[in-house]
Length: 305
Ligand code: GRG
Image 1 (cartoon, helix red, strand yellow):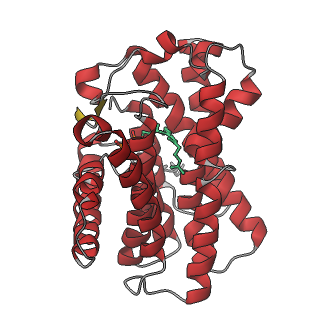
Image 2 (tube, rainbow, N blue to C red):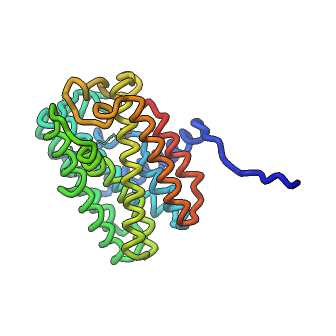
Image 3 (spheres, rainbow, N blue to C red):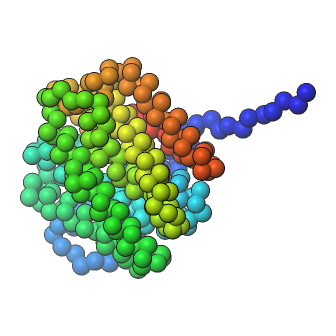
């Protein structure tokens, strides 16, 4: 009898770390060159402080995972990822402000407003937001103008009141309130999921697929974001501030509405495993190779920072 051998790859944290380091180096190289070409201003120091060396670059990794299966050039994906990282850095600078989550530590160093003052941090954040769109519309990005316009439209939508800013508003307004699972998921999908949705939709937009396909990939991204946020909340619940590079144990003190506060630690882990299977199954329906995305999801679920 012929025994069928199932081919599956075992997650290697070391391999994943090396891939993230390469992505970070290439992204930061592009961003440094992009900023260098612009006229210097006083604000640039604070922008660079929030941007470099930067964090894990997991959003860019997801963009590359999906982009690779659609055979899109590495350089194109790195540049679009750089725009995403600008929006992400902006959201973290503003998230740490006294009027938001009031955090003094970020990425293992003093938050931007602690180092440069509040007004400079606000303006550095705003400048990183607009720089993301300068990057997407720049000549460095070798794609058709119409596609650039579609990407700008999608990224604006993901960042504004329907996306990150809207999610942050809900996060703050839910503090110390009893909130339903449905509302917590809606808040987390907006606050964290929308940027992942953008990353998953980019390759589909570039390949000019129809609106239905774009929506399906946005949904896959929303689930990746949800998974990422649950893992982030688990780190806040149990993780070490030293390893995470930010103060942990804050959600409970602030009365944040999270899936852990609602479902409990163990059920939140069970729920995240269910989401992971859904993401993989949804991608398999498209006959896509899921090895790289699987590795990213394992990283998201097992990370401690
Ligand atoms: C960005 C449009 C816009 C608005 C600002 C402040 C704010 C409104 C939104 C905050 C959104 C936010 C901070 C969501 C949390 C997402 C999250 C879990 C961030 C941590 O991401 P990591 O772990 O960070 O990938 P690193 O440091 O690794 O890059």
